[in-house]
Each structure stands twice: as C-alpha cells, then as structure tokens.
Length: 104
Image (cartoon, rainbow, N blue to C red; front, side):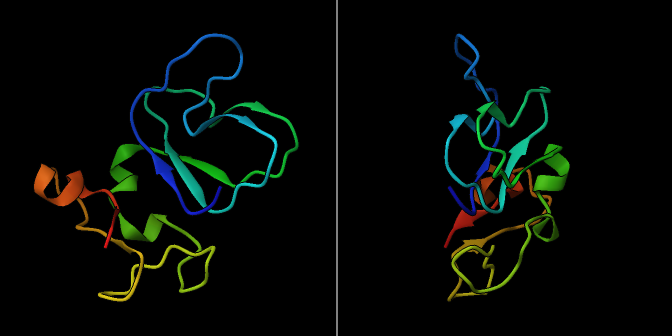
C-alpha cells in the first residue's frame, strides 16, 4: 500500500487491529495515520517493511507533512491541476474535506 492516509477510530477484535491496516505482509510506502486515539498504525506487523507514520490531526491538515513530495508513483503529488492530491490547509469545513488531502 502506498501514498494513503487514515483518520478516525479503527475497531475490531483480536490482535490484527491497527489505525492504518490490520496486518502487514507486504510493503508500505509513504502512508500516514491519525494518532488520536493512540493505537498502532499496523495491528500485526509481520515483516518490518513499513512506512506508516502517525501524526496528530492538526499536522495532517498541512501539506508539508506528507512526504516524499514529488511526481513519482510513490510520492505525495500536490501539483495543481495535474497532481493526484489537493489540500486546503487547516480548514475545518466539510466543503474542503476538513483540511485533509483529497483526490483532485
């Protein structure tokens, strides 16, 4: 999984509950998850090939938090009109996805 983010509470039973994913048997690249409430990003990390970073919600509303920036397939591409993602930093209205990244 690459270039993704998660916010909100993740619930479930057993040991495979994580904020971003429940179990990791592959490679994660440039992913982020909300640290509130505190929980692991990956419920059952099996191979250590992870790139999942926990951030507080306020930080997730800032484009500079999403790295690596750029235009490659494994980058957070915020290029206006031609990129994958867009963001209105620090907004709290639903009209702008609460200040979180959204697909262009």
